Length: 236
Image (cartoon, one colour):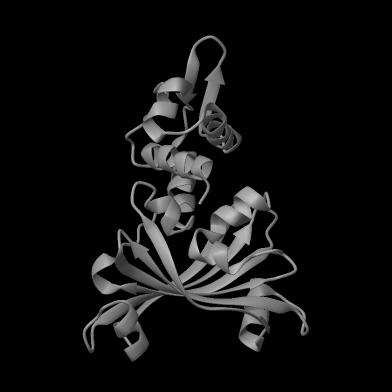
């Protein structure tokens, strides 16, 4: 993950968690440079991302402030933050990946249906294990259309794929549809996630969408039972 995306994710998480509240002033750029051990250009790029996302505002002569966000917009922000991936959610911790499979294959019927693809469309088939501070947390099996996500490399899969999509390709990830279930773990999951026989896992099936409504990912993520939390916001 690029340094500027890491900084942007950390500040965004602080806003979501309420550590930074509406109208709070952010530290000056020179102080952020020291805090994140980053150049002025890197910090500026991170702040520009947050300005574009409508989370902060720069006031000439005064500094940078958290934007006054309505409850409805904050609800959307909380939800959107949940599907930005582990690297964004755990911005203050080390997130790494073990890539088990990285290949381009013809799309299967179920993948075509989920991603609304044509018969001959090819997809990335990615299977990886994600670690947080060295601890195995989730096993992800992902499919993405190569025509929509060009240039994805195995190296990107060892880091943050979402950062590549937003930072390198310039797309904006907007939403996802999820189905969550629980079942017993299988042998591969027990081996890779360090589980005992018959330990349960939480399974998240997801179709993720870009800002223009196009589906870019179909994935099945298998989470350790003791490190999975699902949060939702219900607005009446």
